[in-house]
Image (cartoon, rainbow, N blue to C red):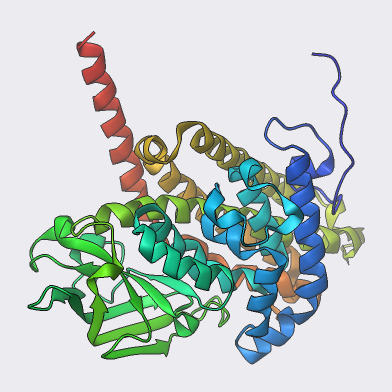
Length: 441
């Protein structure tokens, strides 16, 4: 191959502040529609979000009116559906950048989130939609989809995922929230508690993992049930203050004799554990999206400071120890980006079922790496900024916010130790299956 034509650079030219393809370098993954989406999302966020983030943080909540604006702008459809947009929902609702639904792929999803995260506080508004809508799409009945999707895609109502419990975090098999059928078989009566439920304070629907089998039935006794906030009984929500800040509206949810029609069961009874695990793969990849841009934002601000801040008669960037920090951060972030892109590509080729089988463990390890890179980058950027990195306003504000948010990349979606073990077990499972296949030849 002779020399490839470079595209025009976009965004900041500071080292590692943008993905390599933003800088104009060639890529096998991105094409004109990805650049078009990038431009549209950045422009919309700059015009509608950037100037409000500080006010939202001070108020402890995002202005509710912005959600309708997001729907009108075409953000909700791609956020709800991720790497592929079903044709039955693409004709009635806009898609930002006017990207044809048939062209939408996992790299569009990555670009969308890359820019939403860069904009600041808006991304936390959509976490419930990201993790709550996929089970409805993949496993919900057509009639339930026809009822719920128009409400959430128009911005009229919101959805969240309710799996984690006070005594069952990563150990999903041992959830205790129960859903017992009424004698006539027409309803479930739900009792139990959920904790750390993102967006729960303002959600109208709770995509909930419940136990429909006996208490000792393990994974096979878990089902997924969509619970409307308006259901008869008592559905209480209480806000939980978390280290990353208030905008995610993290919630403690209590169900007391909440009555839900059996039509709100997602798929079949006993399939909830599998549905939850498949959903976790998407969530873990999405956490990597957030981590990468969070690192780039922090590095951009730290680099800007290092170019002008003088200490010991030199700017910081003239000092080898500081360049060493940036070199290590750069290699880590670019490696994380490359691994993420490889997994996105594989998921495009393999499809959902085969992708879940082959890449579940790999995605778990990617999520672990994302958290580890975030921890390193946040700490090194804070050191470069000095006292400014401890301040919630001014030049170090975004680094201070990122440093505080690091646990949000480490804990949700499965803790490091649990996911490291999962990654090895899944790799061994694939190895053993391959050995069996070889033996049959």
